[in-house]
Length: 150
Image (cartoon, rainbow, N blue to C red; front, side, top):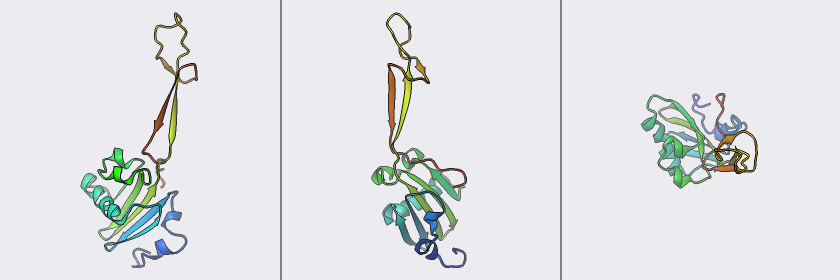
């Protein structure tokens, strides 16, 4: 559709670009115009995101990340939890397609050692089992990871 000069079809009809991969939102930047679907950043943020891969990842036509912040996008904080992950592909100099994923809360439970005074010299020893001392880490600012086929 893009090569036939009919870009609006991929954002206005079914199936659309959101049906290709599991995502919360998508956008099309075509000939300097932006079309947004679902949960997507503002037009100005999409324009920033379109320039960012060419600045930071010069040889790439596509990029995916589950954390824009960790990937080095300076405007990630302004997007908040609405858009944490992104997959983008530059089809030509005039066509860029984006898919967005929102924040997904994840808890990582680290099992601690069963510790009784006098029983062990290392009360912080980590093990894969649950015990009396467990450590919980809440991961923020990440989306679900992108699969290779996506």
